[in-house]
Length: 427
Image (cartoon, rainbow, N blue to C red; front, side, top):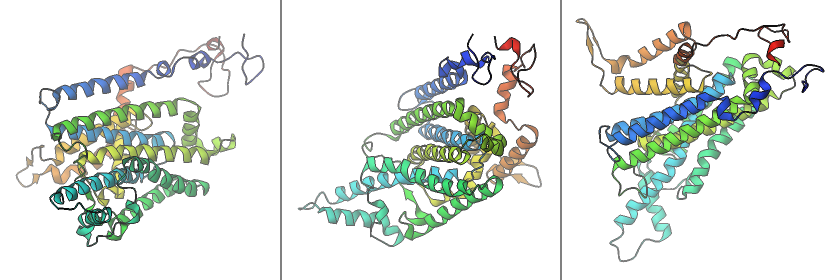
């Protein structure tokens, strides 16, 4: 008999054979999620205008693609909050930064194409300096300038901007997290700090001197270079496929992170940080890794979202957006990856229905309820109800469906805590 590494003469616990099974076998919910996502992607493909029957409009396919991106950033929020216990009110800032990084390339390439088309009839083509000056005038003329800021140095290179999608939010999260965690800032104080970081970034981007066109933001992002000859129906379904693939990869990565020892440690930090530190774990290091990783995931989601939205402005990075993100995760059920996806998808689609004018107004005689005005009130009320009466969120319904039953155990406890493995179970 193989002996336990924790105490002489004690056989291994029941979980040992489970460790030898594949990741998917140990986490069947991952396979279920991927199957549902694949069926959903197939259904949208068959219903889209470009690839199917046309039952789904191009605008609705774009909405679904953007919703998948929001589900991905919700997974990032669930990792950092639901599993590690860090209530970050700044993760949508990383989402927006990812959008800005890819938006710079999209806007540069589109503007350069416009300038080249306008000068095609000239006897002599423009020199590189003349072309650059004309592009700068086109992009920054709206804010009264023509000089190209230093941060646009790599805007003409797609590989460089894709690298910046990861590097800029990742470095910001790394520096911020290192400063905050090494000072052992926790709880509500850490939430306030993340919100302050987001507010400072938004206020900076609102300035014309930021180099990102201030309040005007970056626009025309739906005109993808190399795809201008394609109809928007074709572009929308391609971005939908890319968003679905990113969500699938992000979900598998997140499930892999929380399934192993790393996941056990961050859940321990969430439940009792002092005890985990007492056991010898580098709590600050674990928190920094998860904070930086989730920031990068959020940035990738933003890089896919804004080309579908067509525009990004500093208002997208305002603290309220990160608060909405926390509400989505809470309604879906934090601490459950599929709960975060359900919450983001549900709230996003319902929000589009209410704010898009599709929900009928209710005439009470003395007052008319217009959902475009009352949607945020309804969302806040829903958040309060979920917090008070359904802390597991919508995802908690899965437990009811599965009829989770506590196993009938026999024999003496092998540990001091209730629920420890028993003698009969270790054989």
